[in-house]
Image 1: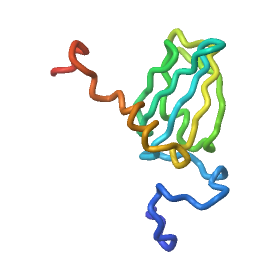
Image 2: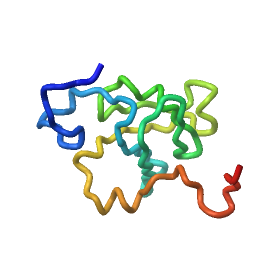
Image 3: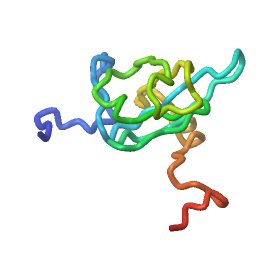
Length: 119
C-alpha cells in the first residue's frame, strides 16, 4: 500500500524515527567493528534478494527488512553469511548521516574495473 497523508519524503523523518522499520528501498549503513581500531562501513539500499558484503561475510537484506533501524545483530547464524561468523553488525539510519560520509562510502553495486561484472 502507498502511504499517503504525510506528504514528507522518506528522507526527512520525524524525530523519534527509531521506531520505524526498515523497508526495501531504504538507504542504510551497515557498521561492523572488525578490530579494536577499525570499523567497516557499507552503504546500501535495501532490496529483497540482495546481499551486502561486510567484514568477510554477507548480510542478506531480507534479514534486515522489517527490523527497526539501529538494529544490532551477529553474522554467521546461517549458511549464507560466509566467513563473517560472529561479527556484530549494526544498522544505521542514513537520515542522520552527513552527505560527505555518504559520498565517501558510495554504493558498491557497480564493481570497479577488474570485478568482471561485464555480462
